[in-house]
Image (tube, rainbow, N blue to C red):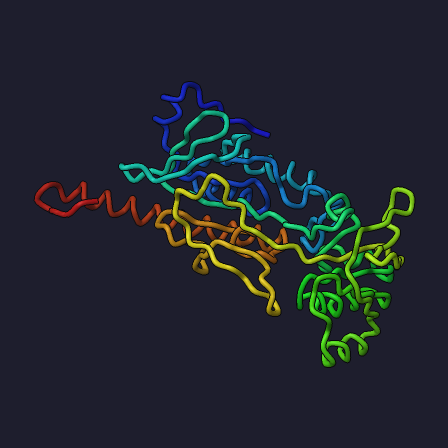
Length: 336
């Protein structure tokens, strides 16, 4: 990864980037690349906590089908660096707009970086059901997205762990990839007659009762064990995480967030933006999973480009206004 060495804290505070991009996943890297290609000075802050790091491969990313996440990141980082993007391996611990209108971000390295604009691509945190074995097998044998993993586990025995109404919808969705689907009601309300009829139409089995833990067959997932001791063999388990926008250290910006509900269940929180990625705070943009909880990597990359383009246009508008005001001189009146 390309590093930026800020020297003394005074030197770091003296430099003002056109944009600081927080987050080094697909959205952040594509935003940084877009801005660098627009001849902007860009600092990418990457804490190295990419959400898909545990996964073996990425899918439905045209031109990169099946690539390992680490290999994708290596390519993307190199491309962004080729156009002059600086990168700091760090986390933001505090952020604010200064009295001069410039944003300041304090990093866990002790440095403070400054920028005219911020673009947040910090992603989200997957809050998993509290069932022993789920977290340990997350993104390998415990899954949530059939478009990310469905083809690879087609025709396997797949269990769906329900924690709310979305469990029924997940079971129906995953039945497109396998005819061997079992819905574990766990902590969700029991399916009503209509839901049971829908599940039966897709040959989805329903197992009632609270799940105790996942059982291993050697070093692989073997089955789901209920609190009463019953065990059902499965090769993979589908869960519905709660997706929470990753905003650690960014609270001082005052961003507007909102809950997202899916099928009557709170799916998580996200940063509110307009279609171009502008947040409720002037000068702050956001892209990727921090704004769209269910977006895949290719969609996050596209969102990073769109938000970066909007940010660049925002800077052009500001630069034009300042130049016009300076040319008019004191007689022209007006501020900048």
